[in-house]
Length: 346
Ligand code: KG4
Ligand code: ZN
Image (cartoon, rainbow, N blue to C red; front, side):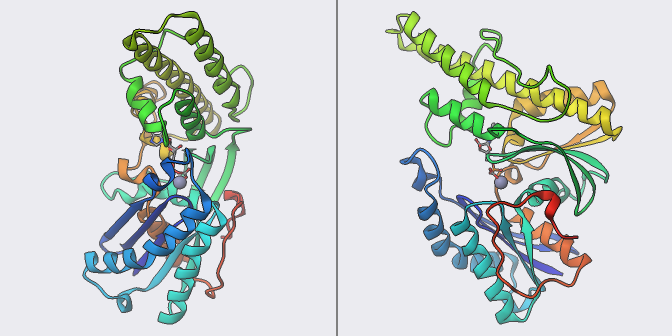
């Protein structure tokens, strides 16, 4: 089966084709980052309008890349949520219309299910069920008990900011622009992570929930105090301050995520840990989780770097897995800005 995947939930137009016999045969991605940078965040109306421009041309390019025509497809998968409603509606309208015109089944995919299954795209090193998944993106921070495709129990969730959101907001505070998570993590490699001891939220309480807004406030207070206290005429001093805050902040987030993962592994007694979502690209998180592997005698799996952040491949793959299990749907356009992983229909 050849399944077209359409991802338009936020600021990336991702189009891919997954062949259940061969694997991924096309993968196209267009990022709107430059369009939104001037606003310091995603401007929803601009995102929708740009998806309208890019979705159909990228579908054509994906078919060219795979060397097939639309008639060779067996089904269409699209992200139905969660995400920005206008942006979601572009992908779901195009996906359902195309499926109707080609007389194909369509299937709505949960964006976070796409992230969660992304490590399974790696044919040579894929995790086996059951596993615990740490899902860390710009909109979510969750620990999920994954028994099988579609069988998800949320073990812990964020009470306020998601991990990626905390990275982005802290980067903005430090004047690193948008989207700053990646820039902050790069600067962190040149900083002293022991210079500031930021709080590790919720670690002193039982349970697997997260909360990152207090950490963000602690960073703001430190930043304001340091800038006021020191005479930062020398640019180099201020540059070093930014790097040290970045490193100390990253250490607090990573330490919290790693300790919660350890707790989840002990609670479930599973031996496999999967990390997915934009923040799973973070090299310090990857490094510390690999150390946890040795300590707990578990194995952790990460998606390839290009499949950590939003992409069409994960949607094509999740859609293919669903279409192999079920008949596909009646091409009714679905778009859910809020949608829990536990509400996915099996
Ligand atoms: O999964 P994703 O592309 O979009 C959502 O579904 O939200 O995740 C984007 C988030 C952003 O907040 C971005 O700052 C963060 O992932 N991110 C990172 C890194 N790369 C992306 N955060 C920390 N370190 C990174 N290397
Ligand atoms: Zn995402």
